[in-house]
Length: 215
Image (cartoon, rainbow, N blue to C red):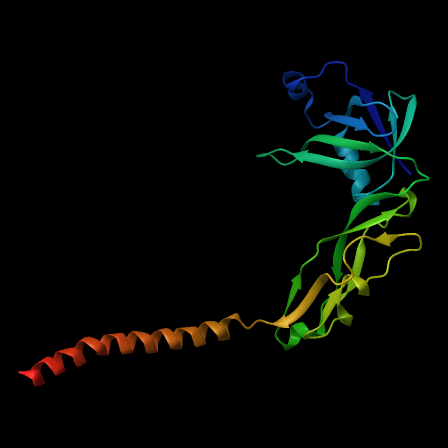
């Protein structure tokens, strides 16, 4: 479990939280098992921890150097213009009970089908799992070297650690490798349109010819 320091935030409200946002301080909220707590954390330390342990890392949040809570990062808010986070929500968890989280899916390597003109379509970027916090995988990797042209990797094809249950529908497609056919379909469609246009252009001439014959 990774440790992160937090400080109780006595003053709340929009104007107060704006003053707290800088490179060293970010407002946050803790909720879950006990009470709701408004606090501040160091955004740099939080990002460093998540980069090392993953988005669903179990964090030992030490509040004012005393109280310790086992938490996971539930949500965060990014600044609409500048890079960086402006707020974080922590969920306190019972380490002996299962929780549901979304785990990122990473594609490792390249499919042999790419050399044959196949395009990789990464459909599911995250997969929801249920597990006790300590067993939650940091990521789910798919070895693309094993995915051939016209292959489809489904949720049912993915294996995770013992005690971890995948919640997604087993039939959901995670990644596919297929030859792109849009261009061929477009070309056929253009030929049909050209034929219809030529026929439409010929109709007025035919009509004019019939009128001349009638005279």
